[in-house]
Each structure stands twice: as C-alpha cells, then as structure tokens.
Length: 180
Image (cartoon, rainbow, N blue to C red; front, side, top):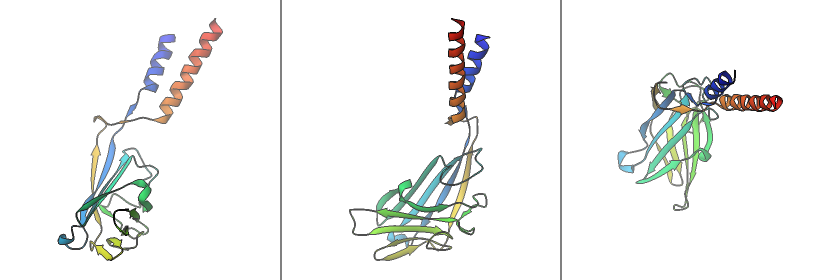
C-alpha cells in the first residue's frame, strides 16, 4: 500500500510536459527603410490554453528599432493588449483587437507610443508616435504560428500537481503518526 501511495505521489509531483504555441509577429517597417524603424514581437501560450490574453501567455517579447537604437518592450510598457482571434493570421483586424505600448527613455527627450490594430491609436495600422511625429507601417502584423509538440523538451509545471502532491504527503505523514 505504501509503495502504491509513493508511486502516485511521484507521478503527481513530477512536472507535466505540455507543448507551447508561439505566435511570431512579422517584422513591420514603420516609415521609410531609411528611418531605420521597425517593430517585431512574439507571444507564447500553453497549447491547451483556451483563453488568449495577457493573463494566460507564458512569454511576451516585442522590440522596437528606432533610428538605429533598439528598445526591448517589457510587459510593464503595455497600456492595452487585446486579443480576439489569433487563428486568422492577422493581428489587429478584429473589433477591439490590438495594442498600445508606451516606452520612456531617459536618453532621449521624448516618449514613444506604439499602437497597432483596432484597439490602438493607429486603427487598422501599426504606428510609432513620438515627439516629432509618427511613423506607420501602412498595415497590420501578420502572425506565424508555431506549435512545439508535447514530445519536445518544454516543461510546464501544473500548479494542481504540486497541490495534490502536498496533500498526499500530508496524508502519508498523518497515516504514519496514527500507526505510531
């Protein structure tokens, strides 16, 4: 009996293997190529996820290149990020879908507002707004979806597994105390 309980404990406490879905936002050139302004991004979700939003993504990465300087956009730069449908290959074309990001850089005398899609300032465009004007792409991000299978090496720890393992450990401890 003890070995059966121990086996169940080990199975429940081991991390689950789950695949991930990555959505790569294609590189957008904002303004002229000569302006050296572009925007790229990527978000990743667990493959079993059914709600795609800021609270469920596993990772978030965006990067703005502006006049030869690269800015990493972090989650605390997000003012709004609304996802409606990631399956159609375009981001920002659904009602309310899009984002607004704000970057403040102490090395330059201005801030950047970056928007894309129908939730942003650029409506059906992707733009970077700054003190001296704006640079727009004239379109929206295309999405490239990549699914890493469950046979891959990605591990996603399931919180329920840890809780179950702790309950089993507590049960084993109390069983042992009763026996003494």
